[in-house]
Length: 151
Image (cartoon, rainbow, N blue to C red; front, side):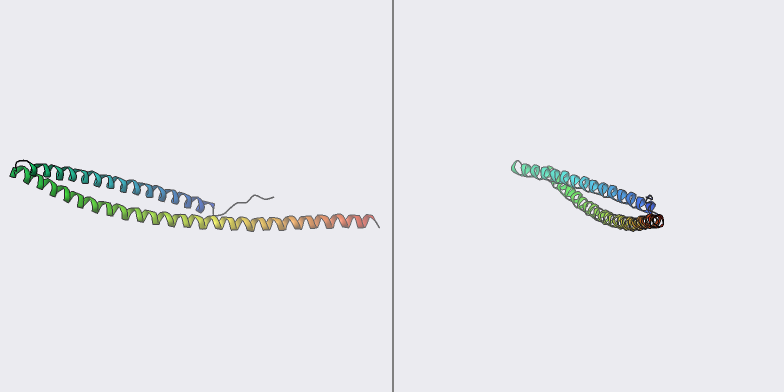
């Protein structure tokens, strides 16, 4: 039996590499998103701390300077939180783009695998035809020799 050689094996291997690269990019984008979300949580924790400090300042003697500093710190943290939320949206968009690229790479790989399977099936059918033809020829030859020997 002949050996099956898929003539587009190089393309299939390239599709595997492209899919792996897309998986790596998707993983990196997810990791970046998690990092951005952790930064936001840290900022929200700081905001909560400043707000708690502000409540404490209001309970004690009111010192306008400390109160103003606290309110300014809260405003700055709120600005930082707003900026961080924008970064998170950007990271989410990148994750979505990477997910779409991964999905497309997987589809292309599956298409190539299906083509390879179809080529293998055609190869096997051709091999079966050849084998059947050889068996028929051998049977005809053997029958013909018996018929000639029997005369």
